[in-house]
Length: 93
Image (cartoon, rainbow, N blue to C red; front, side):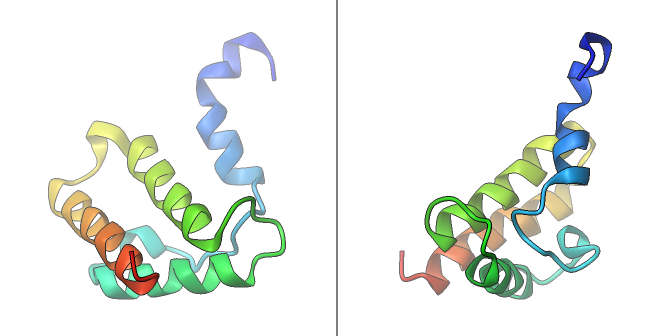
């Protein structure tokens, strides 16, 4: 990746990663339980993940929240943070 494009690494990862096969618009959903369930499904079905399904799902969720940064709507950030709680609960953590 050329140096001038190095600040766009997250976009590159998002476009080229095949770690999890996620539903379109997953991170815009307004139901944290539904988001967590879809992340769990995708992580458990993925042959390309590293680590446990929980680690993979949580990494994807955290990556999205961090990539969106300050541009993420506070209400949607709250939904995604609650999805972390729901995801842990699905795995008994």
